[in-house]
Length: 372
Image: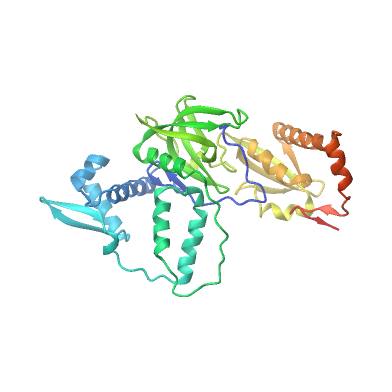
């Protein structure tokens, strides 16, 4: 379980499902076997070729990847058939492969709606601002101008990540398989800074925030770190020695947001009049919906730990009740007691606030507004 990753997806937020960056490039929902290994290997080739203006020979690619000559020829042919702009030319008796340069690429004639779709994708990638692939997309978008204005979609200003340098160095550590030294503000230490050495595996986005899954040298275990809490980072010359045991998907298969660990069965009751919102703001994709004896709806799911579940329950306010396990119920009850105490304890500021607030008639709805 990871004590450094608190926070849960509440009903008022949406998890950004844009995938993960693995230690070898782009992650997906497949296991780290079969087709996924092929995809990762081919993406490695693209990254290597993109870093060399004049390309690489198959012999040089073998030295860098350890793959056989037959495998490399097959991968290069697959990439070319898939539309990757690859070309080859003879060099000292060998074929040298490279990506086409900008001037060699055909002009793009995209419609306004296609360009709008790219801008929408870029907005969702904002938590990865600073990463190389996002920078390439920015270059592309700066060159694209719609042939006609479109009014179908309107985009709000993207939220900046604020940690582009951290993301860039993490990405470098992933690609070079090197260890990084980070200074991290830990929730478990009440915001105090802790210095640890990590070997990053892959990046993950949840609720618009970027996280890195890594091996922590000091704790000799895998941990998840929120990039916004990294206050300083240095890339070391030490080579990474640990590899990811499971696929990125498996690491967070029961996560609500970014917490990982053993699966726990939880049960939460939601009042009948708002139960229809449970599908709109689910605790987990595979949750079960049951009928309670009092007419309420009971949500049952298997999740990683109970911290994020407690935050999800609290986000519902007074219309949700944690039933099981007892530890979850106790945690939610404790947080509610602390919140009520802030309003029950007398004080000059609170007394003044009470005098200025007129009592509202009606009830508080799920959206947070008062209706008669």
